[in-house]
Amino acid sequence: MTYNAPPNEILTTDQMYFADDLAIKSGLDSFDLMQTAGLSVAKVLRKKWSRRRVLVICGPGNNGGDGFIIASGLKNIGWPVELALLGDKQDLDNDARRASQLWKGEIQKLSIKLIDNVDLIVDALFGAGLNREVSGISREIIEIINKKKIDCISVDIPSGINGDTGQIQGCAINANVTVTFFRKKPGHLMLPGRSKVGDLKVVNIGIPNSVLDSINVNLNENNPRVFSNKFYFADVDDHKYSRGHAIISGGDEMPGAAFLASAAARRVGAGLVSVAANMVSRSIYLSSHPGTMFLGLDKTLDFEKVVSEPRCNALLIGPGNGLTADIKSRTITGLRTRKSVVLDADALTLFKDNPSSLFKWIKGPVVLTPHKGEFLRLFDFTGNKINDTRSASKKSGAVVVYKGADTVIAAPDGRIAINVNSPTTLATAGSGDVLSGLITGLLATGMPAYEAACAGNWIHGEAALHFGHGLIAEDIIDGIPGVLNLLS
Image (cartoon, rainbow, N blue to C red; front, side, top):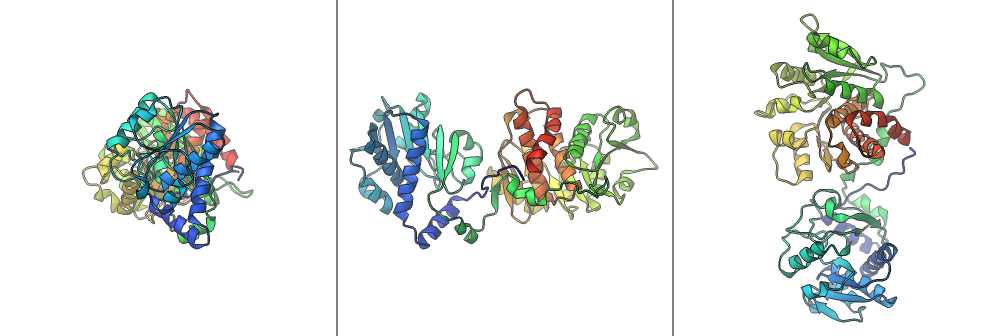
């Protein structure tokens, strides 16, 4: 694999606290870790900005302790630095109190007047563990910093963001740069918090990777580390059927969806792709894409016969199919084969009045790819996208791809990936059809459902990123080979 994938483990706030504890029990000093963290932030700051007037705003916890270290380090090399504290010095916790003793300047009370004539804010107010609404002077300060668009570097996570969900607790600082330690947290990647993070830097402060062996990490940032060991490239003795035969259910009125999905499935590796649609649509499906086979459904060849063909090993049902009894029947028929199945769009909406009537048929490897509207029709919704997707996967028995700019992919066994490489240009007609085709094609090659869903999403995003502005769905398909070359 030529793609150099960074570490992809994501730790919740509790898991990060546990990692800290494990590091300390292994012999590291907690204050040394704080000093390394603070000095690491100062180093990033100096690389980004030249000498200027800095205000460090500190909270009462370890985040504030980092702030004292940063302020001291900058002051020691001659930067003009002021420091403001939320609360009283005597209320600081252990290491934070020790860090405050390194600061030789005045500890000012956090107030709005300090924002005047400041060029740069160091946000060490609240860490990732914040789970209450920001209020009082803290909220006023954050809102003024944002309104004045003052440059800001945040310690760990921009103050106001819940580190486990990405939700904004009333308000949150708009950071230019965020420096976090050891591993990312969900709040760095999930919207709306991700929009506040700016340029995210993950720095090593001495916590050994071995602590991960004692932490049940089931949440990852989606990149090739998640799926590369299951990815399929053709061997010298392969032929089209050994590479898998995917069948895509085609609609009568919106054939474009099947065209896009079938092209994506072929590009990503399926040896043969067929569109199964009513004979009335025969001329439409034969008019283009000569590499895709057409299977005409009529009284002598129904969908059940088509999908029961032994060499067919992956199915896609839903995109552009229509909300008809026929498509509902195709969905159930496809699931009854227990072959690999991807359900999207109409195949999901058809069961909105009775989702359990869909879930009861899910026995084999199945991937559901709902956008938010489709998700709300089928599953419980709390607004915590990670937990909601995890719950949906367990309830349905399928791998669930809850689509969006912060797509969450969950498997019934508890594994979860957050996909964050999707650019805004993917908000174009047919993009979702290409994604479902990618996943179907990967399933046809023999990839397990979770890995196929992760790989399909990552390839989809990378192809769009590489193309840039002006993207349409067909461009994603054309970009697939370039992304595959990164993986080979």
